[in-house]
Picture (cartoon, helix red, strand yellow):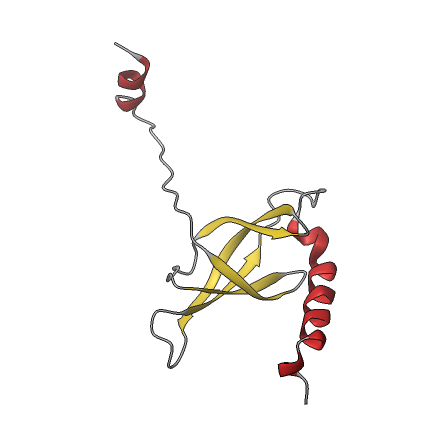
Length: 117
């Protein structure tokens, strides 16, 4: 019997189903974030959110708290996610750069002439 057969015949077999979903970060805070996606995600789903910022990837585990379809935008969903404290913030942690992301978004808003009155 090979290793795969042994695993498949095990009585305590555990599996994890994964998929990659593209999202856009709309808003972010120390406790969570608002995401926009073309995919619906069910509340309670957990995963790893990876954000590329200044040529570096930052990641943290999140749990989906709500998901609602945007009015007038077929196939677009707003997704509320909370950060899970499965480990302490580290150098590559998204929670570590929240204030930098927020200030970067504010600067981008002010530099966009279409957003000014």
